Amino acid sequence: MLQQYLPYIDYLKFNIHSFNKSANHWIDVTLAQWQRRSAIFNIEMIVGKIEDANHIALVNQLNIPFRQGYAYGHPENLKNK
Image 1 (cartoon, rainbow, N blue to C red):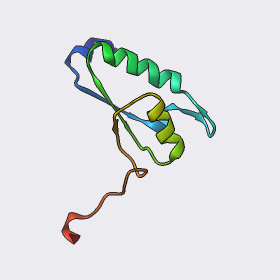
Image 2: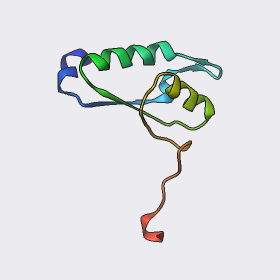
Image 3: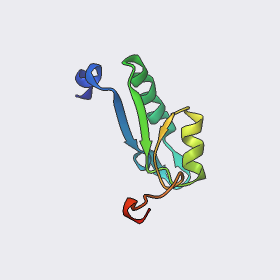
Image 4: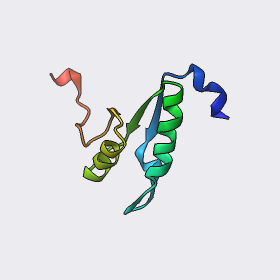
C-alpha cells in the first residue's frame, strides 16, 4: 500500500521499538529491508525513540544517519534559557 507513495516521500520515520521482537532479539532484518527499499527512491530514514547503547548499536550497524531519542539528549524548555 505504501509502495505507490514512495516516489513522493523524502523521509520515512520509524520508532525503533517497532523492530524489537523481545528484550534481546532485534528484528534488524526488517529495518534493513526498509533501508534498502528506501534507497531505491532516495528516501532518507529517521529512527526515533533511541534510548540506550543497544539502540545506538543497531542504527550504527545499519548506518542510519538521522536519529532521535533520549540517548542523544532530552527536550529542553526554551523559556528557561
